[in-house]
Length: 317
Image: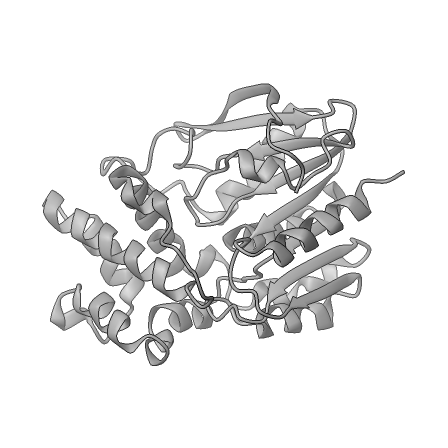
């Protein structure tokens, strides 16, 4: 990673319609190669860590807080904030609006976890605006993937999953758990909402905890972050990213001509490696890097180093 201390030289709030304003910032070299960061979650927001994945002398690094999270407004942590105009299609439109606002013709797009789903959806919709893709912890947010994380992984973490399941009303335990949690997060009783957010985030911490020395994500200690994150994840997961199931894999041919690197940990059981493997088979310009002993996200040094190596490769002369 590049050293800390990479600060924005520009930032703003972009009105994207529907009463939403999204926060953006630009760091690095204003005359450098444009690159866009798409964070995970949905609902995580961006932070200084993401800036350090790029050479600041070579890149014009653009970071975006997606609708409802980070510094964007309105805040999904507020129960009165409607999520009706918060879908993958809205986010794709926001990305295009930001690109045009900044006067960028094309950019490298980097995404992690949920950010991979969004990056793929954006690139398949606007391939002419994407120069390269750097993707880690690859997901497609299909119904099968949502079922895997919310139900099938109970075979790996049975005690923790039983607690996750049993937090919802008994009559709803055999159905979609993402739906059940979304309903609880919309309950008029704040105690019900808070319990749902806490239990959802507790399970999120469990299913990525496959490596020795795993530490709980400290962001989940913040009640507003918990609520924001849980509302947005359940909203997107219960609708399978608002995409036709399997569409990202089916339409991967639209990525032809876009060089890409997909970096995935072999120990990532939250998002199993077959997701990236199937995508690599139908995206002719992609390289798949599978890293042994690494899990989900960039908690390990080998995953982080591989992402930086990819952005270094694409930075140009």
